[in-house]
Amino acid sequence: MTPRKISDTKHLLRTAETLSEAVPFIKRFAGSNFVIKYGGAAMGDATLAAKFARDVVLLKQVGINPVVVHGGGPQIGQMLERLKIKSSFVDGLRITDRETVDIVEMVLSGSINKQIVSAINDAGGRAVGISGKDGGLIQAHKVERRQSLSDSNIEKVLDLGFVGQPDAIDAEVLDVFNESKIIPVVAPIGRGADGETYNINADTAAGAIASAIGARKLVMLTDVAGVLDADGNLVSEMTLSEARERLADGSVTGGMIPKLETCLEAIEHSVEAAHILDGRIPHVLLLEIFTVRGAGTKIVSA
Image 1 (tube, rainbow, N blue to C red):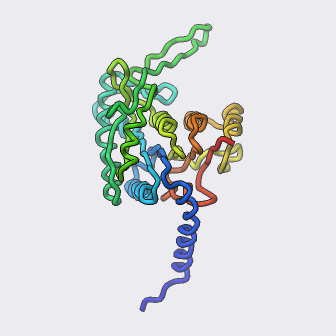
Image 2: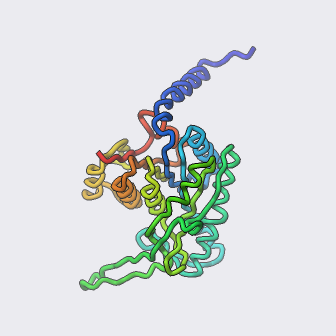
């Protein structure tokens, strides 16, 4: 008989304690809709991607209805580079001409979407990939950006091409999945009233979907720990008013601004809580949802 190390026993005890801690959360969230925005470095790491897939399958197994909405900016950039198509950004949004939007749709709805679906299926779940165009899930309109000219009060309208903003989400499309064992994986591509295809920011799409389906939680996976204070420490929980103060005083900067704004808008539309997590941490979803301390930043109404 091989003796067991004390460190192994301690590890098993911590695992047992975590499982026990998860029980009340499992009971509380059974039957709830969770929207999970999946992107960043976690998508590019095979080990993290496999762990993410297992976590999503576990959520479904304990009675939670996860909807995965994914990004794919780096992969789109790589494909455009391979095809020698130049690309630029305005306020974090990729300028998307007709040639580019075809590539964006191919990468998001094709290779990336199917990789995530395959990972979830390999982890023992049943996933189906769709885009926002399927079943009319995401109706969108063209985004406009205005830029003030430095030497006058005149504003210049910037044409971002086929970049869209959700107008409406058909929740019935996703209700079908809730009644089954299938996990929907959504590529953020929408269709306009003009019949055009629009590239939608994945954070924005996830927030709109969470609001439309009455999600209990909106979870945003990022490449940072969460919202940080002025000293660089993680803010584990904030109310709406506290989050607005941080946005107003400039303590939240860069790419965290639109993510936090998306979370606030979702909560204002009756989503119970929004979470900003570091997707580079293995099993961060489970740590945030099923433990008392959590692992990222949680935003609630009050």
